Image (cartoon, rainbow over all chains, first blue to last red):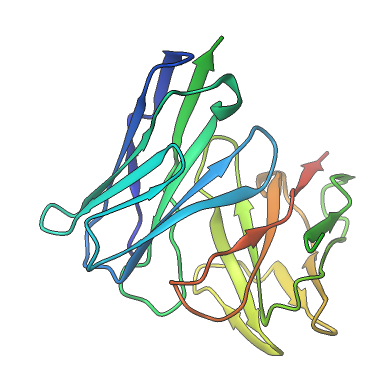
Length: 111
Length: 114
């Protein structure tokens, strides 16, 4: 079944730097969502991008989608220590409801 | 604030002793999901309810059951927990059964099996 695969598995940067995380998937999608998970907590929805969209912005977040390469990227600009978390992509694999999460990228932003 | 609440946050049980985890929501969403997340792993969907309609994932073990007595509450029952069932259990909700709908997650219940 469809599952997003995030890359890199871990990323460590300094506060103020930009962070880029990538997601690849295998089958065509209708939608792809990105979520954040702080340590030991539930997931929080960040952004949804539809298959007919190429780029979306939300505050310091920028998500791109390349359906020809079956990949998406999440860019966090001007990172803060509070951005330290795991980030998951969830492509739908064309199903009507199911989001299949990858293992995530663990982002550490050092003060 | 509208939210998804999970109780307890931490649960310790013994090998083979049944345990129930609870989830409640004030969002009035039609859909409730249960995910299992092991350390450094992806959240894995166990099942979901659309209203009272129960939908089990094909690879969810029979050891896991769920109940949804009303719109607000959903329970996860583990009939005979094994050591491999130690994990974080996440409850989530959404308005509709659609991959274009945002899912709202609770804080999770961390289950330890002794």
